[in-house]
Length: 99
Image 1 (cartoon, one colour):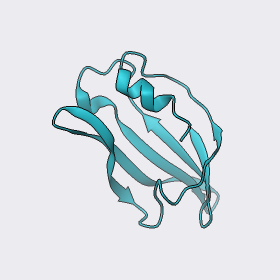
Image 2 (cartoon, rainbow, N blue to C red):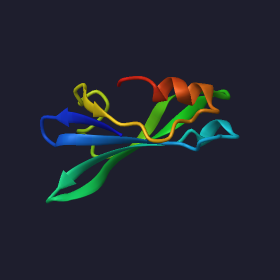
Image 3 (cartoon, rainbow, N blue to C red):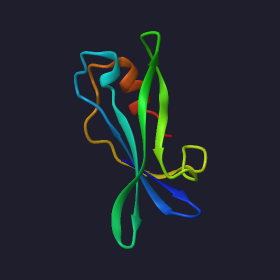
Image 4 (cartoon, rainbow, N blue to C red):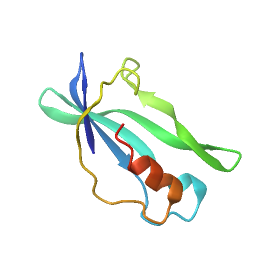
């Protein structure tokens, strides 16, 4: 869980979801953007981690608010890691980044 700041939405929590021991390329997962709206936590954007010709590449296919993205968020103010994808080299590389 990473907390970033956006001028319009304030604190935006970013949750990366994956399996601990993925067996297939596309099981690395999703990225959810969560923020408070009227006092309640809401998922406001989601991305899928996509592959190109069998190789993991990047998060894409965004769904949700058009004005909220990786580009509109500032640097993390806090990072919490809960369950690392230890058996997935590509997943561990992304999991360890401070983005």
